Amino acid sequence: MDTIVPARLPPWRRRPCYREGVQVVLTRDADDGQPFARALGPHVIPVFMPVTSVAPAGPDDQARLAAAAAARATYAHLFVASRHAIAPLVAALAAAGGRPADAPPAIAVGPATTAALSAAGFAATSLGDTGDAAAAALIARGVAGRRILAPRAAGGRDAPLDALRAAGAEVDAIVAYRTAAAAAADPAVAAGRAALAGGHAAACLVFAPSQVAALADVLAADGGLAVLAATRVVAIGPTTADALRARGVTVAATAASPTPAAMAAAVAAAIS
Image 1 (cartoon, rainbow, N blue to C red):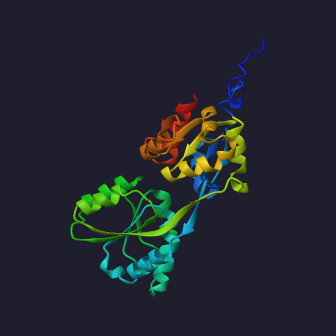
Image 2: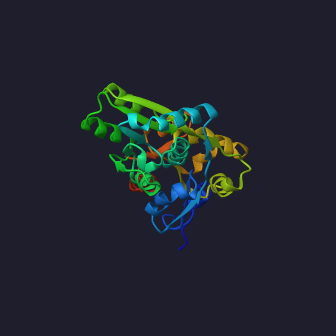
């Protein structure tokens, strides 16, 4: 006997075996999203939808980073939360007559950032998968009276750096890059728009608060964030979840940590 599935269900749920071969939208490009796509497993079809891209910092911030690179010997550590800060840091070092090997030891957030730092020639150690965890581990080693250079994204999270300051460190947080929202007409977001607007995606993974407004802009012509009602929205952490809820989006699950395995577990819980 055929199974009758109500038409009001989104297309991904009308398939008898919707847990296999479902589409999952990731609001990142393929480079940043691939580890998360692999963690989702072979039966999931990842749809990369980079709603933001990396753009250079402004001239003033570039000058500040170059000055910090010239004074690199005065810093005890670098504190690097994203691989996107690495290229601007390398450029600043080169402008100051230095190279990554001349930089102070880097404390990285997560294995991917650690690997990227090491590949670029920095001495890097991962002390945690989140900025808060890495800051706490560094504080446990002692930071009072030490200078720390933190090349960061414009609008990045302040909490880890504030914790370092509260522990007695002098933290120079300098914008190394910023994020720019994608245009709705950008071909890179076309597949994601189609999957979400058509109700074909079982889940949509959102990786940063900054992506929420960008996602709304990308989906504006399709009905805005309201189209996410046909899918399960999964946030990488509580700050991102709060940003989604503030926009009226129902968050189906929040990852326990910002790792591919934790995001995959959250997706599995959301669509089971």
